[in-house]
Image 1 (cartoon, rainbow, N blue to C red):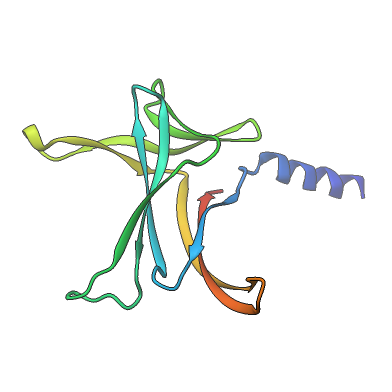
Image 2: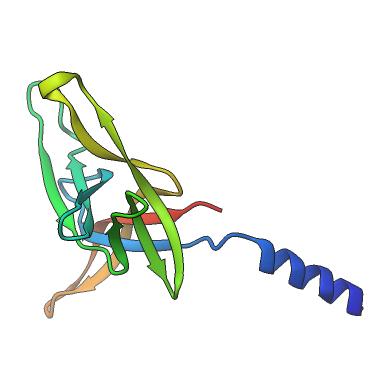
Length: 147
């Protein structure tokens, strides 16, 4: 029994911390999918998430998108690592590193995801507006750290 507990302790202590953090929630009547990317300001040491939400009914002629910047608690830009890092209860996770793309004057820097990704889902919740209880769809976006 002691050896079994020791093996379990070793497995859990050597595993990488994995988390799913809800970073955004809004009614989903128009925005049903979301695409997230890390953005940064190196001079201020700040990083955030840029979300682009798309309407499930949009097409080439009628496109409906919305862009939102989301400040994630614990997310910052580390200029020594040249990366966006996430601090979860004292554990630092490198979420994205700085890369360059383009040529000559069109060259620009962006953050490429490394140990973090984004996922979104639409959930139904019961909402009481004071008059009646309705089923309302919400778009939730999560930042997921890889294990």
